Image 1 (tube, rainbow, N blue to C red):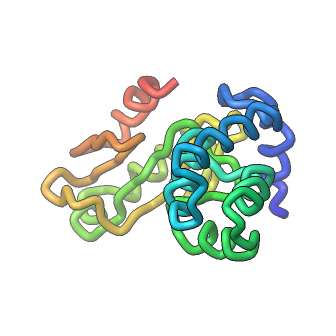
Image 2: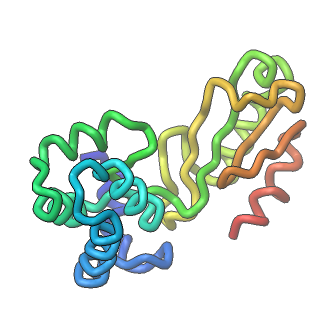
Length: 173
């Protein structure tokens, strides 16, 4: 396993407001499964809700889902690794997506990305050790006229300049 992932999971006791309290996690997973009537056909929705609350899919939660929904763990892992919406490692509370599409690229997206990397000390595909930010690049956010575009927690920030990134990120403490 990647050293950064080891460091994050070792620190994941309470940095992001969620603890690895297995009992609390177990209770919440049971509630989510019960809400979906313990139906195997609701597997993806159950995983999405667990992901939404925890910012990742803890192994203990996957084991519990497999048992309660009577779905093989290998099938759940196939789904969790196939869809980009799921993560098997902790993610930050705030997801940063920097558009690198053509319109954004020609308007300076690389400089914006470089600035985000410098401010957060992470590269695309990584999460900082405080579990505050996760950084990803995307091919297009569909806001080409606003390029360069950065999306944070679903909020679009258009016509971004590198100098503005520090102020924008301060809003996501």
